[in-house]
Length: 131
View 1: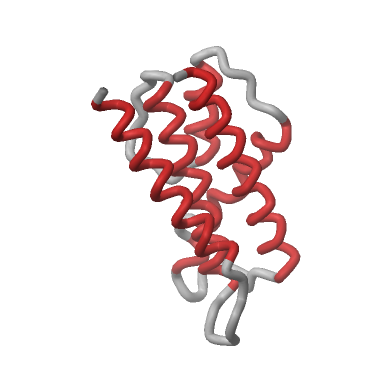
View 2 (view 1 turned 90 degrees about the vertical axis):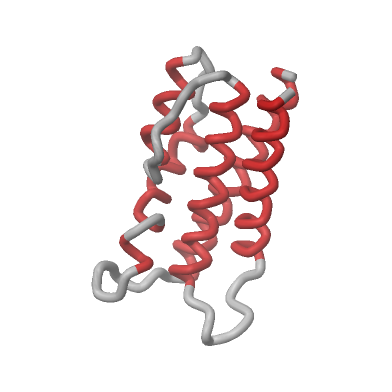
């Protein structure tokens, strides 16, 4: 099934971003902003995998809120913790360009990672149950 391969590829990429985010700040040269970008990407790709599984088209977007809204339109209930992941959208663009953001703290990074793990696991569980 073609969709199964696409879903698998989205999840593979989400897992890669999540693992990079989990690597933590192993040197002073690594920025929390970049780790949070990987957390955001893990969420975005997890949600896109779920949308493919739900056979719901989606536009090219980094907006976690838009992706969650599309998932909700299919009848899937979005838990509060998963809904909170909308805040990660800020890490998709703004923090990647100097001068457009406040430095990201370790606390913010830890929250971003926690949300990314929760979304990855939540989406994966639904995908598995829908298969």
